[in-house]
Image 1 (cartoon, rainbow, N blue to C red):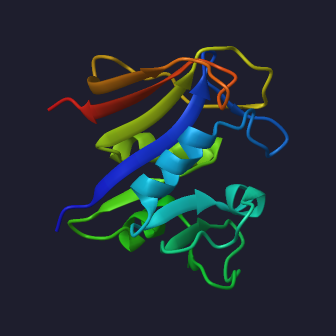
Image 2 (cartoon, rainbow, N blue to C red; image 1 turned 180 degrees about the horizontal axis):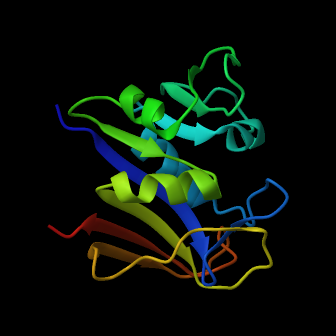
Amino acid sequence: MKKHISIIVAVAENNAIGKGNKLLWHISDDLKRFKRLTTGHPVVMGKKTYESLPVKPLPNRTNVVISDIGGELIKGCEMAYSIEEAIEKCANNEESFIIGGGSVYRQFLPFADKLYITKVHKAFDADTFFPEIDENEWQLIEREDVEPDGKNDFSFSYLTYVRRK
């Protein structure tokens, strides 16, 4: 059975994704897209990402939380104590989403076959970053550019990549 592991992330021009366990911006359209894509699918995250969520656990999704404290339990979540155990908890023949944070993204990148990236066209001061995307490994298959408007302070692009065969 094949695991379909996708990473979903919003990154700045300098690959920044967060500071002080908080997001760097609020883009309503991006949050709606995140909800639309992940609802009904397993979401895998580190414990700090889980703690940063405004609603816990995320509704209508299996929440898998990775903890380095063996035996730790979080109500309403499935627990994993290693990347390998988290992968085992990803659904077979169904898309599972890796939703952060920085070290979780780095560890899952070799296992992912799809990337949903919201690229915010501005650099930010941050303490957490997403790894560089190697264009030799990843092929851009979809791009949608969004200009600033009354709801969005920044221009950004929705980028979808698939792993090259």
